Length: 219
Image (cartoon, rainbow, N blue to C red; front, side, top):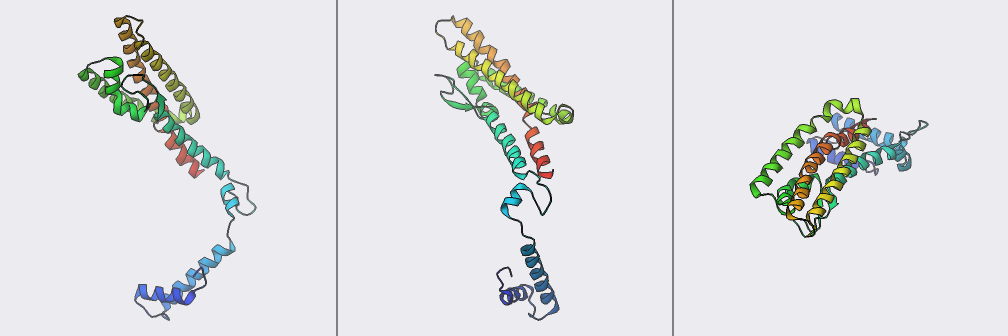
């Protein structure tokens, strides 16, 4: 229909409905489709105006800005999950660490980098997952009270602080100049900040980016 091949289109319609081409139903369908095609042509919007959110003389709805905001929050959430963290000569020689990877490899990190036993490492990883789940519920009733932007900013700052401390603790654990017991204390100190990292992410970044994207698309 859009290409002006009306007769071919009516034959296809008739075949689909198992009717004659001149039947009232087929004629009505053909006229409706032709009207819709012509209406779209008469009211077509340029891609430039579409991206700007402009229709006719109306002001723009900042479509590109809203799109970049939605994409940006999702990208930053993934960056929170996939932050580069180096464990030199330990469990992760050079690997991505964050919520996803830390969730998968936390027992290995606790065994190889912190020096815990296999059973204790798995138990702590399980407790960490439960803690992560519980703190994720805190953001749900407070997102309107605290605000989306503040939650993401403060949570990201908290996560940054946690990974700085974890990196320092693991680094001191690798210093041969320190006594074995001292190195172990440094490594064990990092465990608390692994837990705290999950707390910040669960409150501020687990659900807020998804809420923001859905709201931006409706605004």
